[in-house]
Picture (cartoon, chains in turn cyan, red):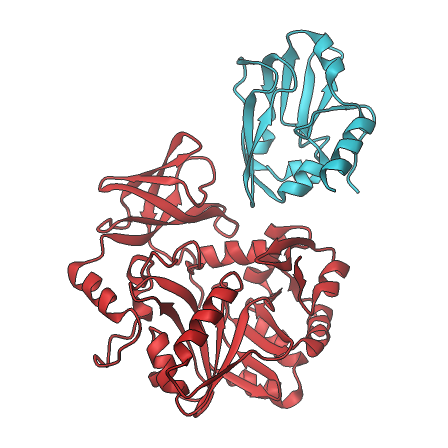
Length: 131
Length: 357
């Protein structure tokens, strides 16, 4: 069973979202997603300073198996990308909710975050998906 | 419905991620495909390849039959040898590829792909009607490939005594057998090692004994990156029924001599050879960032080609691929690969990408 921390929000594209005190949020992929993808070997980071709409593809992660888009959970501007992933994409496998974070976004409207899934809802979504 | 191999419970116990591969429940990996890849390159790993199609071919005309259906020439095989080659259609396209093992005067085994199973068995039976041969699948077939620099030593230590000693003496592409167990010094990783064909009831014991010696279970994922680094063709990728061996980097597997051996596909292949094939299989190394994948378009100075295989090469720590491109491109030539709409620079490279002693 994969880990789904209670203090995070989630998307149906298997991203997690952590709201920070400074009004930005940090985004990565879930434990379930990294396990599905297998060993990560390449990350194409999002471009800092670029704005995206909710659901836009902002970055790409490639595993031994396939390439996957990483989406913006809400509309906003990319303010930081995790540079460590260029040399160590495997951080996404070993620590998906910590050192394996992918980027930081400043939401256009913080209220949008309320529409994301909580841990229980995401867990249910994953279980329904794997049936 | 998927079929379990005789080692299915062993895979589950080892924490395998199982996937449906050509109707078989096969391990994709046991946790980390990369670690399994490195285990095979550095030490020893083992693969359950029981899903491969095994067919025993016997009878007075077994040799004549195989000389007709196999584009490599089994007439060159002595007893105890193995030979890689292709089965071709009349157009020279590849029906399947596989290894023939010669056990005796009129006794061979042909091991071909899992994905092509029904089609190739029907094809082989169809052509067998003109020959005094019997085709028979071994009962409850299993096969374990043990590969890596330490693979032979580990395997010899766990085989029945006489068989272990006989295996130690085997040259490359040679085999020895005892009862149902066939030990061949062959593989699909670019590493030394053995492929062992045996009865399904014996497979678990051998698997456990190898595990006890530290041989790492490795899945289909690692098998694919290992064969790609070794530049080994995969049916359905580098070749298929519309592609000839000459267009798949497999010209070396066609035995043109003697010139009066009428193997299926010979005339078409001869015409293509005389005209010069328009396409060739080459190695490609990605120079920009990203991962090249099968199906992506390759732009070259002579026109477009396509990646037949591609991925991240764990040993080389960069992305490589095999590509079918217009003939005439030399290693070192710059190309571009269309990776999801972005043109990424690459170069034609010689393959195998890794070379082992």
